[in-house]
Length: 461
Image (tube, rainbow, N blue to C red; front, side, top):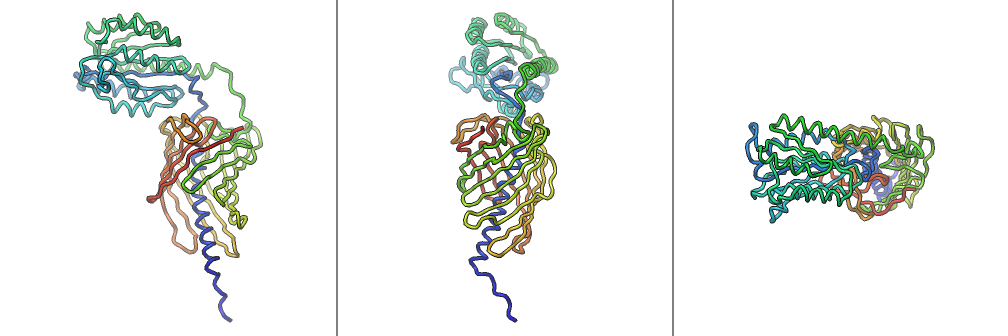
């Protein structure tokens, strides 16, 4: 009896193509799904307390202080204090005297713009601050600019200044700052800390501060005193965030436990992305349950491919998900998928998601492909670690958003494809999430191959 004829080459090519498409689609979607839980707390930037740090970077900061320069000591202590700031704060960093502007008495720069959960960016921004070469020290100009910065947000507002001396540009500095504060009409506290200041200049700074409503002056003759003073100031400002969070009425409960502030899995929600592979749309087809227990289903469509996913949610967040099926327009369903093993919640409690927070995620996915009379089974295992970086301003076709950035690394193994050896590769990804919207942008790279997507439109009922 002769051997059975080999499948036609076009059929083998089709099955191979489907297998590759399944692996590719699953990798893309699995990585995206795994990133759904990179979120911060329920924050409203405009309603949260705002703090702007101001650091003197004029030439006097090159002077020695306690075994270091005044600049080196001030940068180090301020970085320590910034790490203790409440992540709910809207925060930014301004400097003066660096030489960034040609007019020395106008030389102030907002090096880290105001944003929520901005602490990592501020800490990194401090590393790049170096004293300028011009003799002028426009302290008052920096404080006036800071008042204008914070006036764009809704309060309360705080300005924290670390200076190595008095303003050298305007003898009416206190009056100018007072007028700007009155003009802004904001709830304002100003903390001015004189770091290792000569007595005559300390007196001038004290007189300037006395003219500013809601302002206080503290002397820090050495690094220890600077650290102690800044710690107390930061603790007072952090308390404002607690009071603001407790003060207004609690928001209405989510429709279901799947309705997350940074990935609202509500019936009718949809997101469309422009990608190098074509247009991709995620649509929530159903969501039901309570705030304690709920489920949601989603369809992900791209070109001729469509994939179904299933989500389980609880009061702890989106605790698990599972793939359902993959279909090709011309063939119907060609693959079924199942997550057979996983660890961790895919969207943990939002309050955990603060800059610097890292956590692992792992799962094993089995895929059964059946089309044109041919069948094969694939297994994909992913183990990854992700880290919350902070808030960034992101512009995409759908608009400009304040979004939380999360960087991740996933080590992936795929096996079972046409008798081939297991394939191992690493995917580095970055996702940006906007509150009340979802993922607005993502990028990924692996083995020299880059991909990504940008939000072009969305609907959140």
